[in-house]
Image (cartoon, rainbow, N blue to C red; front, side, top):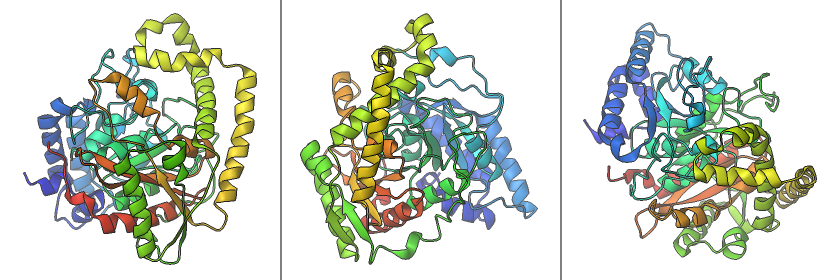
Length: 464
């Protein structure tokens, strides 16, 4: 089969299926065959649902024949991080604790993708409960990076990053509490957005931190990401954080360009607060110069130190995560991986005063961001400070996981998208973040699309 079918964008596949130039069955069979051939090396899937996917693809083709096309992603395969419910299928969160947990209903986002005519191909690897790191003491092996399978693919939406980058599926849904969509996007050379808090319902998604959790798409192109977010965004009264305001048409402004836009560069995050790898930093600076060459005004802005955002995020996340996991940590601690247990247990020693102080500090950090963004359309900064570490060196994996600038935007709640910015001399992807005003995902996509078109990195494919 042609690689073109494996790496076809979701948007192009949707157009071809609607025009009857390609069937959903043909595309689904090709992707399932590829997955069966290579996933033994990459461990992206926990559960591949081949028979169910083929049946859904057949139904999608029958709908096309009737002229009943549900939208631009009709008939296109999608996979789900295994903390997202799919009715009748196990949701394990990659944990021994939930091996027998069968979803009684679809998550809100699953139902939205199905209603759009998409074909669900299976459930994807994650870090345990979306907080543990890559671990080998769990029921399922950790996913691997398709650019170099000795390295991790980022997390916690690890299987989502791997499957999309490796051409197993054109789009996947993950979650992001401290960067868990944007990290695998950064590590795997694809696109991932954390939407504005409240833009996408978390109903039917295993929680980690109620005030920080988000659901977001991972795709190979910015256009695909916009189309998936368009599909899953919207008000859900079953999620108390869900926002009722109308959803923008994200694809409508993609091609408007950046001429005349005012863009901030949060450079101190990766040159002062932390020292990013030289090639990573250079790729972000080069992107800022690229945006200038395209007619945008780019100027440096300053926020409070990255360490303040990270510490505040950590206290809130661990407090809320411990509240969710405290009973199992008391009664079944040995059923967690050592990494997950080590990450969750500090929450037991945080006090109510610590949590209240963090929420107060959060308001100050949010205000500082809004002040810095006055008069700007968007901002650019680093995502990961360096490329992903080798899975054989777990100390290095642990060290590099904290070297990132994604957590501030979970804390603030604003949209942030990670996109590729080049390739390191070690062969692994480089990446950056574009941050927008609340509920202005359309501007994030607009800036990201302009960069994507100029860099044209999608022609390079992983060696799997």
